[in-house]
Length: 438
Ligand SMILES: Cc1cc2nc3c(=O)[nH]c(=O)nc-3n(C[C@H](O)[C@H](O)[C@H](O)COP(=O)(O)OP(=O)(O)OC[C@H]3O[C@@H](n4cnc5c(N)ncnc54)[C@H](O)[C@@H]3O)c2cc1C
Ligand SMILES: NC(=O)c1ccc[n+]([C@@H]2O[C@H](COP(=O)([O-])OP(=O)(O)OC[C@H]3O[C@@H](n4cnc5c(N)ncnc54)[C@H](O)[C@@H]3O)[C@@H](O)[C@H]2O)c1
Image (cartoon, rainbow, N blue to C red):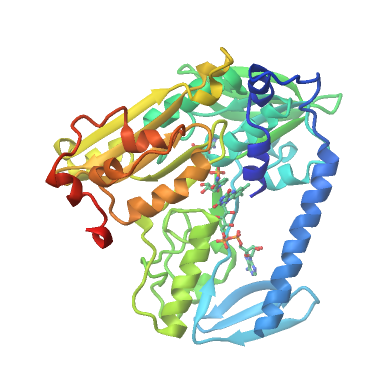
């Protein structure tokens, strides 16, 4: 959440963009009171926790603080924080124990921090290495760079976000980062970390096809963000017969059931492949409705989960990438509409203009149903939620085309695409009205 909020305040080049609009931007205007921000954030988080605790009390939920593990498929033993042990039996047991950051097996790894450590930093690092290519690495490197830390981003492939993101969008992000972002270190694999005599850190990676050593010195922080692993190994699951997959995630079906009746799992600890807060919450709600309100067989549409990366600029997407759609439905059954342009927001600053906005629709033929919608550019994060509703409802190109554009916005490109080609005419127009108006 704070990444999202921080992101909005710190759009790269915001000061430069403001200059283009005629604002006087004093030197050092972007400087941040890191300590003050951390203090206010910690207070805010504490208040949220207090509110949740109060809510549970009000609902009559007993909260037992401690470490829980299974002794058998109906029994959980809790080592409570107050030193006592509680043994609880249940007809229904839900595992929602999440995950922990993964660490590379390299010498000196203890000198680095992970995303938990990032939130504990008391000072803004002057020179920082961020290792990884996923959400956290991209977001945190973007924030640190935007705040003025000398930021180096190290990743194993040619691009970041290689898994699950459309190559057109990723390429646009790479170009934006090259113009306005951290120093990029491609094809780079972590090798070792050591502490220098002056307390700063040296980071060594192997880079390029020949695996040459790259030695970079003088970091005051090395942040590892190479994914998260489920905590399933410490829950006594071996006493239950609950099945885990190769990566240790609890195997669940689309209804949050494990293979053991009465044991369910949601969130990051599961095999669903989505490590996102709203997915865990939605899964919990659906499960509770089914178990206790007996409300049918509602399940999450895992195929259509919208996601946002709070990169600079942000990325929003839902559904299949172009390669995924072609693999699933066959190349001949997929049509793509895409567009790349300099946003009007950046019209007055030549350097800004290099950061492009890109949008893509992936359509399944013959009905031209939208099976993928992807964008990168200002406000892509905010615009995704509305488009996600439309895509989940099965919107087609005709539905988008029939929606009158809002001008001047970036999102309007999705419904105009520079003129979709043929305009609908005559009787076809009424066919494009929503059912309740026709
Ligand atoms: C840096 C960072 C930024 C993120 N940003 C976003 C974002 O912007 N948007 C988004 O949608 N998602 C984001 N995520 C992902 C999101 O945080 C997770 O998907 C979500 O928290 C998963 O919820 P969960 O309940 O499965 O697990 P968690 O939130 O990890 O909660 C699991 C809880 O179980 C407790 N626990 C573990 N084992 C036991 C045990 N044996 N006994 C008792 N308690 C136990 C843990 O202490 C923890 O409190 C982010 C993740 C990280 C790390
Ligand atoms: N905006 C958001 O919604 C948001 C923000 C932050 C995190 N998250 C969630 O948290 C999850 C965890 O984030 P993450 O960025 O740590 O994981 P990730 O799975 O998104 O990315 C991990 C990256 O680390 C790389 N990697 C793996 N092993 C490596 C190694 N040994 N050396 C170098 N690189 C290695 C992988 O290639 C991958 O690119 C995400 O999958 C996401 O679901 C979401």
